[in-house]
Every structure is written in structure tokens, then in C-alpha cells.
Picture (cartoon, helix red, strand yellow):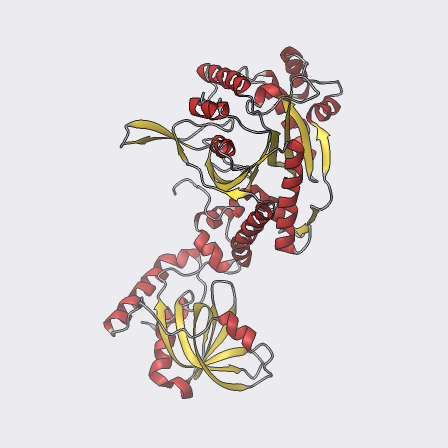
Length: 505
């Protein structure tokens, strides 16, 4: 290995140098192997974590020798080689760092020379030595030996050049290495998931798992992904929602049920939509849309407290968002009426809504039914303004085939959507439990599907059969987990999903 090559490998590299740097690291790998050193050993000495050492020796004074020998491991994220004394910074998965020191009089010329020659930034190493504090007070391990744990063949990105969003998404593994925020986001999700499950458990909900491969897609208005099962020689669908199976659980006597799992919708991908996403869906016997408001608010607020210690959350850009309190409730029809300057109700005709749409610049799809047109007006005119947590109450009955009709307002369903920061976070219903009306609704959906509506629900005879065995009064809700992380962090959906779907390079 040339001196020039060794020097270059000890620092972050520019993109233009990448092929050369990869070649140099491959050569080092070969040199290790030829000298009898395994660059990817099955195990290395490791007696403690960097975090536990930090905690155990947090109060050491300057220039102290503890007499404690440990074997520590981590990724080299800084390396400075001088004559008789070399320094490195090791980092483990949670971001904890510790300095390693290599002194000629402790390790000898051969070991020090191998460290200088073979180790690059990014390599995983194991270092054995005494825990000390340096003359500057830095907690360190003073090495007596070291082992290569894994030789990296690609250099880490340049620290002073932030990764683009596209690079972060495509190479999340690199993002996790170099960016503390990425590591923090990854560790936030399990905290939120635990909080959600705790909230359900405290309220006697039972968690179940339902099929992701389904003979019929249903439970939401969405375009499904299709696949083929060779064993049965038939078409299957990736589920768009678990609703119809969870309701089967209710029929069977599981009175409070929830699932946290993946859904798949063959639709657009943007800052708030992903084709594959995690969703919470739950049902409460003898509940209604009001019960679901209370449950949803508890899920969000308790998740905020679990992650931030308060219902006031701090977004990545420093902005604070208050998720506490009871949250606003507004009428869907009332909010649209206010936005367009004329009264709009469930009795407003399709032609009248088309005329309103033209005035506000909304392009109307001829296939939109009346309720869909009303919802599109809401999406355009009202939704962007809903920054604080707001329940939008009362949706069109013709776009809510699984929802009970409003007990007081004709043409309206007892359905709400929850909006935070201008995006939909959750939806809740008083569920339709009458099997006769449900059949009529699904037959109408099937007719829409026959006319070309790719999002229309299929006629699920087994689900209807289940309803005929009787389902109690029921409240239901669904909430996107990835969107909940958006509400807690202010990040887009591609940042709250660890590995979002991207097109191949």
C-alpha cells in the first residue's frame, strides 16, 4: 500500500475519487487475507458496549487510568494517524462514540503499523485495552491490541456535503451511518408502536393478524395490487385494508379488536402517500364515531407523551406543535359552504357542485359521483388550512359504503376524518351493521366497478354471510402509522418509512 493511498483512505472522499478509493480498499482486503488476517471474522473480542462504558465511567477526572481492561467494538468514523500516537473515534449503532488511542509503547511497531496501513474510516474494529481519560479529559480506550471486524470496501460520504433526499432514501443504510437524525427517526418508531399497543391494551383491545393476500379486495376505496397464486391457479390481491376481516372477528365475539400491519394500494406516491404503508385499524363493539374520537385522540396524545414527554411535540425544523386538549370539530359540508360562499348540503345536486367546481378552478372527472365531487372541493379549498388537530365530521353517504347513515342528517354518513398539519391522519365511523343495507351498498359498488371505477369495492359474499350471523353496534377507526410519525416529527412520509419504495436506478 502506498503512503498516498493510505493517506487518502483516512479521510472522507469526494465522489470523483470513488473508483480509486474502492480499488484501494479492495487491495487492503487482499493484503489482509494474504498476511493471514481474516477481514470478515466470525467473531471478535467484545466485553462491553460503548454506551455502558460511557455510563460506567461518566464522572472520571482528567488523565485517569482505571486499571480496567475491556474489548470494545464499533465503526471507525474518525481516524488521525501521527508518528507514535494514533487516534480514532468508534461509534456503535445507537450513535454512542468513544475515542481509541494507539500508542507505540503500548502496541509495538508492527501492530501500530498495521493499524495505520489497513484501517480506513468506515471499518468495523475491535479494540482491547485499558479505559482511561486523556490529558484533555476525553474518555478513551488505550489499546494493547486490535482486530478487524469488517473491512469496508466503499468510503463514507463527505461529512460537509449533506446527502440529498433521494440518496438518503435509496441508501438508508448510509443515511443511518452518517446522520444522527436518521438514527433517531428509526428508534422513534418502536417507541410509538409500543405506546399504541399499550393504549389499546389498557382499553382491553385484542391484537390480531389478518390476511394480506386476499381473494377479494375490500374495506376501502382504493386500487389494489394484483398477483397470481400458482397452487390454486387464481388471481389474488394484496390487501388495501383489514376492515372486513376485523369485522369478522367482531361477529365471532372478539368485542374489541385491532391490527397494526401493512396495507398496499396501487396509487400515487408523494410526500404523504406510499404504495406500501403501515396502518392501525380497530373496532369497538357498542361504540360509535364518538367513541372512536376519544380512542384516536388518546392514541395520538399518548404516543406524543411517550416520545417527547409532553403533548407538545418538536418537529425536525424546530417548530412546536401542540397535540393536547380536546381538538376542534368542524362539519365537512359547513366548511365547504364557508369556502365557496354558498350553502352546500347532502341534497345539493351534482350539477350545482359542478358549477361551483368550475368557479373555484377544480377540474371535474366525469366519473366522479356527487359525494366524490364534494370531497374533492374539500380537498382543494379546506384541507390545506387544517394545521391544528381537527375532526372533519359528516361525509357523503354515497362515498361511505361501509358506514352507518347519520342518525339525524339525510344523505350523510357518521364518518369523520382527522387532519393535522394539512394531511389526513385518521378516519372513524359508526359502522353499518345491517346486512341487508350492506348488501345493497356493495351491490352498488360492484356496479360502479363494472362501469370502470378501479377503486370500487367488490361484492364479498363471505363478509355478507358473516354479517347475517349478527354484528353488534360498532365504532371503527383507521390511522396511518407512517402519518402519525409525520405528525410527531414534521417529516415527509419517505423519512418516516425506513425503506420506502423507490424506482430502480
